[in-house]
Structures are given as structure tokens and as C-alpha cells.
Image 1 (spheres, rainbow, N blue to C red):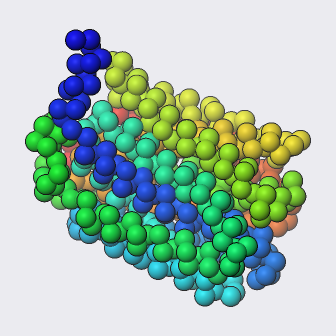
Image 2: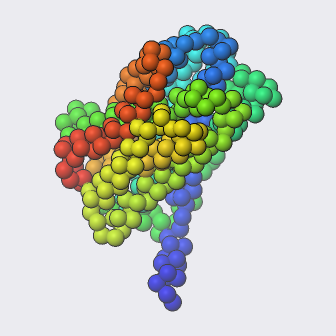
Image 3: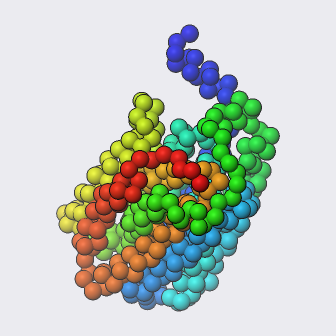
Length: 425
């Protein structure tokens, strides 16, 4: 028997139900991003119908970011207290109702209220998903699992420009919000049927449970915010999210308008360029998670493997500074695709460092706090982007910022956390 055959036999003996759980996280994240992406795709249409300015659109985006920041701070703690099964269910019900409520908005204030409610609900997705990965995967598999479920954000960003224009042409923009918003309730049925914690799951083999729990045992005692806030690792994670999360939000909400204005694309023509950008981002999400896991499996330390992957991603973002000067559509699309791929690879790794450094009992709170920091950054950047575009009519300065902050974030991360390792709480 070859080594490959023996390895395959061992994997089959262990079981793979944890990857079914990962698939549930992937589809939830896909729906999460479909719901938040709809308004970005419809921005040119809604701007003409509702009559908002770039600055007002920036305020609508800021409403989502403000609620997302508040929601992430609460959601992380909620997941640690209620558990992922109940907490995730509450989150997706709230955001699905809010997504459908956009159909009733007829003004800037109406859309702002709907976006605020959507932000509160959607804030639960990543704290719940990261905590679920920490519960269901040993550390050596977490970056890959995170990269896979995080790829759902790109699939959602791909499906939205394919679905939304077709729905709008066939029925109208109201129905686009109703149909996409209802997808969360379909997912909820599968979640309630197939998900439970590993110790309670009836579908999990003992060998797979042993594999999941192969890392050293951890205490289950609750961790206070005061205890967490005293660790520089929390602040390194939060600062990294504060600096880089806004760039992803910028791509989601402003790239359709950028392509519309710079290259004259209509709603029906946006599909292929956006699909290309987010397909590349999908590759980056899985590839970035795989890269650090590959380094670690080759014998590198977790510290060296994660940071090297993050450095590679940070360097790959830099060419986006030339996007505003791209001479043709596909040159701009390829630059945007590379940047979004690198961001998602970065995101998969920085998310995973939370579970590398903190025990499972605290992961939800840590990710929620970091996500809140990222949303505060996104809120500030969204308002700034709207005002910059309102007065300069140029994307150049925004792309320069987008291309430089990842290296800055990694430098600060290295200064605060010279070595990634489990901390004692």
C-alpha cells in the first residue's frame, strides 16, 4: 500500500462530517454577501430613481457600517453565551427580514434605516462562523476551513450581479430585495436539521470527534472583556481589521459605480466584470488559507506560516494603486481581481490568528471585537469615500489608500505580536 493510499484510508476512517458543517458556513456567508451586495449593484439605478448624491450614498453605507460595528461587539458575546446553533439562527432571521425591508424604502432615510437593521443582523455571521470552525476543527485545519467558508463571501458577490439584474429586468428592484432576502430562511431549515456542537452531534463518528479534539484541552470558563482587553494580541487583531476591512467594503459598494462611470457599463453589462473580480477573490480566499496551512504542514511554525502568507497577500494588493488609471475595462478588472483575491487571502489568515492565539471559549468575543473595529474603520472610510468622490470625481486617492494599508497593518501586527502562540487567560 502506498503512502497516499494509507493517508486516504486514514481520512476515511476518521470521517468528514466537519466539512459538512463547513459547507453550511459557506452557504450562510454566501447569502450574507448576496444580501449586502444588492444595494451596490443597484446604486446607479437607485441613484437615478431616489435622487441621492455620492455623499448621501456614503451615509447610507455608513449606516450599515455603524450597525455592523455595534452588532459585532454584541454578536461575539452573544455567540459565546447562547452558542452557535441558537445565535446563528437569530442572526440570519434578523438580517433576512431587514434585507427584505429594503423593498419598502423610498428615501435616503428609509434606506439608511433598512441598512442599519441589516448591519445589526449580518454582524452575527463571522463571529458565529469563526467560533464554529474553532469548535469543529483542529488548529492545523482551521485556516483552510476558514478560507473555504470565507469564499462564500466571493460566491455571494458573484451570484448577486448575475441574479439582481435579471430580477430587476423581469420584475423590478423591489422584488430584487424580497427574493434575495428570503434565501436566509431556506438556509435556516438546513442549519437546524444538520448542526449541533461536536459533543452533541449524532452524525459524528468517535474517531472524528477525537480528531477534532486532538489539540490540547482548553478550559471552558467564561472570559471577561476586561481580561481580554489586557492582551496586546486582541489589539493587534483589531487594528489589522480596522485598517483592512474598509477596503473590502469599498470594493463591494463602490466598484460597480466605478465601472459604470469610468467605462460606461449598464446594469446588464456589470455582470461579467464583477463575476471575474469575485471569482479571483474566491481563489484568493481558499488559496490564502491553503498557503499558510501548507507552510505549517511543511514544518514551519504557526507564527511563520501565518505571517508569511499575510505578507504575500499584502504585497499582491499593492498594484491596485494603478486601477484608476487603467486604460481599458479588463485591465482595471484584473487589477481589482488581484486586489480582492489578496484581501481574501489576508482575511482568511488574520481571522485564523484569533483561534491561534485565544482559547475556543473566547474566540467569538475576539472576532466580534475585531469585526467591530473593522466596521468602525469601514464607517469612517465610507463617509470619506463619498465626500472624496463628491468633490474630486476621482478614485485615485482611494485606490492609493487601498494599496498601502495592508503592509502597514502587518507591520503593526508584527510589532504587537512578535510571535503567534496561545495565550494564557
